[in-house]
Structure formats: structure tokens, C-alpha cells
Length: 398
Ligand code: LLP
Image (cartoon, rainbow, N blue to C red; front, side, top):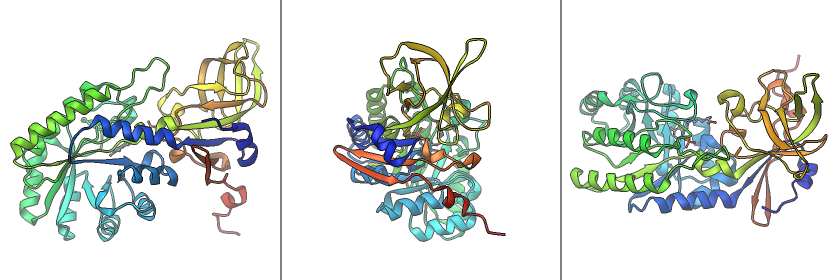
């Protein structure tokens, strides 16, 4: 991407999210190639980043969408997603939300037995069920989504109860799903969980697809090893082939990553607003964004590479890089080695394409940044910087 970031920031404001569509496309194709399976349907977990050009790009690449809320469902249907490949992986949804999803024609992936029962009682003929395989993994305890300490899914050992609901109401469970966590770099854990899910799937009569979820990690740190995609892909395909032989017919294979597709495509650019050296020698580099725009470091102690793109050749310095939010946890990096930042330098916070803007808030009444999408020579302004008056206009007057 040879785009003049400083010019973009002058036009669209600082801080600024920039996404490279070519990276998204490349990740999408890499994933497809890693899964040489005839009945493959990949989905994109849109919670990672709902920015429309990214979603459209993935729809064009043949992806369906995994959603978790009525807002996400409406958003992706507006963008042209086919309801048949939209999966609503619910979590504590309301009955009203369930009805909206039924009306929209999207399949509900039930995360509890009582939801499956209420879906059947509402007259639905088909459902998917998210199972908890009792094996979870992830980059942080807060992103682990399987095992006893998580709220997600029906325990794999409760499959008989799922079958009882099928028999009682005539609803067919056509999808068997897992999602064990996020930021997984260890292929083996993923494969172990897949085996558990296949042992559950074997017991269901009406399956059309098996969905191994998302969770594929990306290398945030310089020394992180990317997940062995070939190993995951080959093993998944092989397991599915063996499964289908035993099951007696072909079953679609689904995966639904978010981060893997968009994480590395995004950068949050910010401007240095203050450089302060304390008497103890500690240097704080303050910038014009904070955990309101990228909460990952604060929420999960996540590491993001940070580069000084204005003065990349400055001598290296060890500094703390902090935001402009009125909280001491508003820290992007502690004791980070970086080309010494000067006032007004632009810092690039890398790998911010997933769970950056989608988790952003207007805390401290700071507006959301603009989102720019680069597609080769094309520059798409996906969202202008939020206007402060618009931000304040949500309250009733008086
Ligand atoms: N499928 C389901 C049902 C999910 O809940 C998620 C993510 C995904 C797929 C996609 O996971 P991915 O491939 O992106 O890891 N905010 C956290 C991550 C939370 C993920 C929530 N669910 C972070 O910034 O690391």
C-alpha cells in the first residue's frame, strides 16, 4: 500500500483507521486453498469488522456471514448477503430477536437447549446447535469460548437432549457447530476439539453442515508463529471425508473466521500529541486516540506492533505509548522499543483490522475516527470521522 497516510489524515482527520482490501482478498483465498473440500462454505464473522467494503469483498469471494445480533443480520442482508448462508449464532437472544431472524429467513444457531426448544415451539423446522466440546483455547482467558467457565454452547455430552427436542417437535438440527476461542495459534487444540464435534455430529440424523467456527490466530508479535494453516486445513478435510463415509452422505464443511481475514489488513494511525519524560527517566508518548478506538491492549493485554512512520530512522528509544482517555489503563504499549517519536509524528498501530472499530466507543465523548479502505489505486471513504455535534445529538434536548 503506497498511500500517503499524512495526506489522508489531513483530509479525514486523526486518528484514522485504514484497511487494505487486497490483504483481505489474499487472506480469503489463502483460506480457501487450505481447505480443498468440495462442499466448502466459508463464513465471515462480521463482528470482527462490519465495514461495508470489507464485507462486500468477502461476499464476492463467496463467503457467507456469521452474525450474533439482529443489527449484524440486517447489516449484512442490506449489503447483499444471501440469507441461506447467513448464520445467526445467537447468545442469549430474546424471543423477539428470534422471531425477526425467522422472518428474515436466516438459520439460528442455538447456544442453549431452552433456545432450541423455543425455536421449535415457534414453528421453526430447522436449526443449528452450537456445542461446547469442553476444549477451549485462545490468546486470553476472556476470549476462550469453550470449557466449563464459558457461557457458550450446549455441552457435547448433552446431545441426547438435543435429539429429544428434535423428536418431540420435529425440528431438524441441520448444523453442528463449535467455536472454541479466539487467537488460536496452536493447531493441535483446534483439531482435538474438531474430533469431539465430529463425535457429536455422528449422533445427529439430519445434518447438512458441520461448522468448526473461527478462532484462527494471527501473528501479532514479531516472534509469533502463524497457525499451521496447512495442518488445520488438511486435517479438517481428512476428518470430514472419514466422517462423511461413515455418515453415508456428503456434509458441507464450514469455518467462520473473523480476525484471520481482516486483522492484518487494518492499521490505526494516530498523531503524537505529547512526549513527556518523568524524573525517573520513563518516557510517555501520548497520542490522539485511546482505548475508545482500540480496546484490545487494555482489555486483553494484547500486543500490537507500533511504528513511527514519520521518522522511521530516528534512533530507537524505549517508551510507553499511551492514549488520551482519562484512565490509567489507557496504554497501548509499555516499554516499547520504537524509532523515537517526536511531537506530531504519526504512529501506525498495526493489525488493528479485527475488533478495532467494531469494539470502539465514544467514551469521554470522543468521536469515532474515519475508516478508509484502500483497494489498489482506489481510496474508499467508508465512514467519515464522526461529527461531535452528531455525537451529542443523541440526547433529548431540555
Ligand atoms: N464465530 C463465533 C461464534 C464467534 O463468537 C467469533 C468471535 C468468531 C466466529 C470469530 O472469531 P475469530 O476468528 O475472529 O477469532 N474481541 C476479541 C475477540 C472476541 C471474539 C468473539 N467471537 C479480540 O479482540 O481478540
